[in-house]
Amino acid sequence: MKTLILKTEGLSAYGLQTFDVHRRANHFPTRSAVIGLLAAALGITRKEQDRLFELSENVQVAVQVNNAGEKIMDYHTVQNFRSPQGKIQKGVKPTYREYWCDSEHTFAITASEQLIKQLTCAVKAPQFTLFQGRKSCPLTRPLFEAVITQTNPSTALKEHGENGQIFSDIKGENHVATLQVRDKLTSIFRKYAMRTVFVSGQTTKNDQEVINELT
Image 1: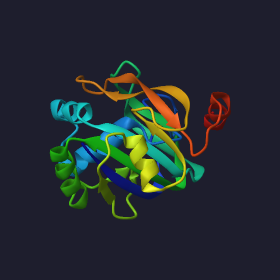
Image 2: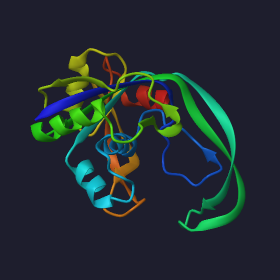
Image 3: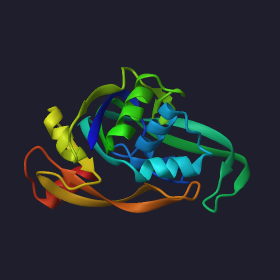
C-alpha cells in the first residue's frame, strides 16, 4: 500500500448535500469532494457512477485543515433548481453560498501501489479542470506533493509534517473525536451514505473540546 499526498490553497467551498437556500461550506473537505477531484483528474465523468463508486471503494482518505481561512458569503439566483425530492423545479430561487477564503488543506489517499501510480500521473496531468469544491474555486498551486509508503492516511499526514486537525476514514494517533457525515459515495447516482470520520489533533484533547471547535 502507498499513500499519495496532495495539497491545495486558496478559495474553497466543500459543501455537504443540501437543497436549502443557504448552501453552507463544510469546515473540512468532504470525502465525496476528494473522490470528485481524483475522478476529474482521471477523466471520469459524473455519469460514470460505476467507475466513481469503484474508485471510492478502493481508496482510504484523510484530510488535514492546515488553515481554515476566513468564511465569506456570495448571493446567487438559480433557475430550474432541484427539489429535495430530486425533481427539477421551474422558476427562480435565491441562494446564499459560503466559501472559505485563503484556506489550506493537505490530503492523503491510501490505495494499492498500482492505483497510486495511476492517480499520481493523473493529478500531474489532469484530464478535466480541477476545483476546490465549486467551479469558482480553481487550484492555485500544483496538487501533487509526495508519495510515501504508509497504510494509514492519517498517519501519513502526520509524517508529512503539516499542522492542523485531521479527518480520516481510519483512526489515527491523538484521536480526539468521532463524527458522522453523509458524504460517502454509493452505487446510486447522487445518493450518499453516512460514514464515520475519525478526528485527530496535534495534541490530545477531550472530545467535547474538539466538538466545540467544530460547531
